[in-house]
Image (cartoon, rainbow, N blue to C red; front, top):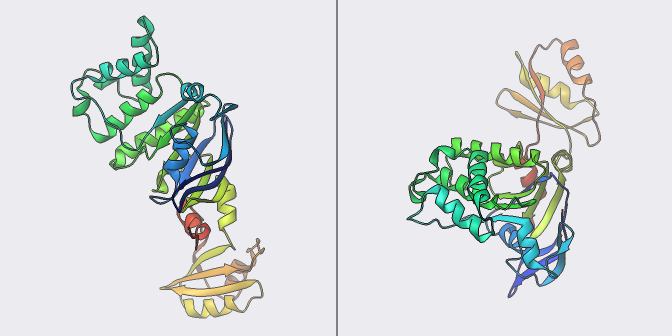
Length: 308
């Protein structure tokens, strides 16, 4: 549905997007992760045909962004980070205005608008003034507007920015629903927990460079150098740590308060010997668990030292 090849955009000496390669299929919900100014918005605007690349190619639903931009805009729904609303319109009037620009006319216009309001759980605000909506409700109205022409591809730039916790949860639920509808979604964010349980694929960008791209489990595996374990014993944690440290498959052992943090050597995947070792030495376990790699730790590991 979306394929980019070495997509590049420069602003003078600054390379905002540096040879970005993406390949997304129908139903992919792609989390585009990076700090502010990393190149997320620039990349999304090029895909939406709102910004001309300096180099590279991009195909949306099989169509090149160079050959027929107007056709691609009919296939894409783009929701920017910040967008204006009209002070003198109700929510339903706001949607009908934009539906008319998509040439959705006649009785079907009102029907389509009502359907999109229901999809984003905003039907109860249909007659409210747009400028009186909360930030979260405004974002949902913007998403309803983006969905009016039933685009196959959605580009959502920081849709949860500035929202309270409840509104962020609601946006995540909407993103899951869109993936279930087989929409191909790119959603950008610099807040990693927002995307952890929503996206099927993740791309990490820093200073215009795509440093990682793949399915979530692939990114986690790529970020994990070795298995780390958290261990607590009922007494004598220092003695337990010294015992563990002597084993040949242990890379390092550090103490964090009463907790023993154990890093296994690379490619050591079976750590069943450790509980046995401790129990046979007379130690009793309070905790024994493998440290999880989440998107935040993966991002910190994979984006080290990237320079513009």
